[in-house]
Image (cartoon, rainbow, N blue to C red):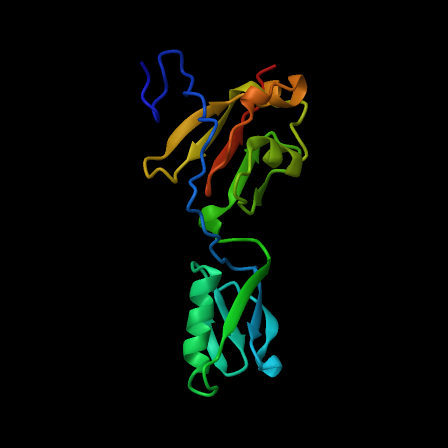
Length: 191
């Protein structure tokens, strides 16, 4: 019997579990996101700001604030605390308007995908969603030998996925959920 991060006797990895997400997921802000900061009854303080590559934002009355790695509610409370020095009882809402997410949560697709890339994680995202985003497999892909490297479990487990069965044969049983930080590895066929 093979353990979940070790190769089995035949060199294959265990199949990926069909369900992978947890119900308590909260989007984490990352560099490249855009935030819509709204300050109730203070439109001059409301604006859309980009999250810089260093994970910070700047806005009126807020010099610089680290927002990367936090959710929108935590950022809104921090802005309220900073604005409280200048505005009486500020009420702030932060809405993420363009999503990139932190690198640690992005889904990376490497190998024989038509367009290998990193994708922002979305809750309930499946391997089919990922394959549509990257344009499918190349002609040289060994789709049924693909694996998902999952480091979110802490142990760096690797699971097999049947991309060829899913894409070419329409076998929806091969469609599995992705987790934040998953790496989808698509090897090249030997012939």
